[in-house]
Length: 100
Image (cartoon, rainbow, N blue to C red; front, side, top):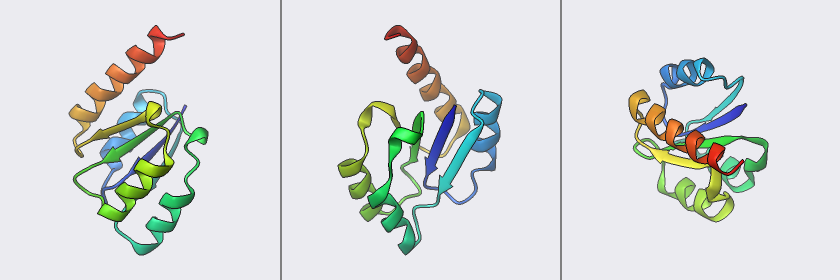
């Protein structure tokens, strides 16, 4: 499975947690640099199983780009805390399995 993390500078704990849950492709965009705005505009979220947006570490322009360009069916918005992310990820995976 693949994941994209948007926001935050130090996401090693999140990456480790995602790997423990079976994610093998994990990319990260900090969301603070000017070039990240460009990446936000051209994101193709169909290549990721899930997109995790860390709402407490992201600039407002990138949030606007995300809202306009991402399919909201596979996006989790949360704070940078592994217990919170893990819970939301479990809820997402449980809901995803209900639709299969």
